[in-house]
Image 1 (cartoon, rainbow, N blue to C red):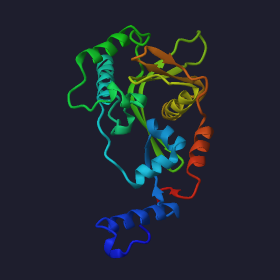
Image 2 (image 1 turned 90 degrees about the vertical axis):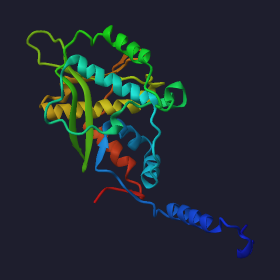
Image 3 (image 1 turned 30 degrees about the vertical axis):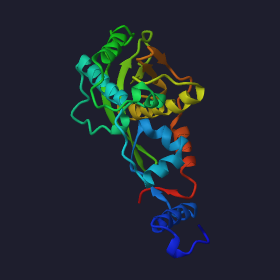
Length: 260
């Protein structure tokens, strides 16, 4: 191909030259991207764990195929909110589409089918039945679907908190609260997976502490993976300093810069 004369290079020669030039520009660091000002808390783990992939998607965005499992998660969240009969209040702003459940490996299996038809009624009914038998069913939350915009290192992290509960404490002790995030996807595969997922809870805890004026050490957080009927309370939630350190370490390299 390198030795071919221009006249026999083929009809795709121009396209090939453009693609090669694009690759060379990326390799030379010319493919710098501007990070979004608004970052969904549920995507934070992707930004800090796979910054290169995030940059590639930002440079060349592709439409995402809608998944049946994502639709099922949306319906379940709406049902929980309606069940409690509590809205987030007049100051609720638009919810990011990225706040939908992380599909994980489900996207490659049956749960990852495109949503040409709505999820089967029995799938939603099974999740509802599991929730009704959970510890959360009889408890009254103080917040449901509370959206908080968290200022974070010249960015805004969008935190859509599913529910907040007041915990039982001995008389005379300060109030404690627990943030709960409903998940209709699969529970973490291993400790590394949970370590990435806890970042979402850590951001929720920080956001709620600031918004409600509650000391952060009086706020706990948990995932409830409804399909598996599993409650997972991570042993460690990142502090604000740890979250900032992760963010700055991920985007310090040349090739990714902040928005002007």
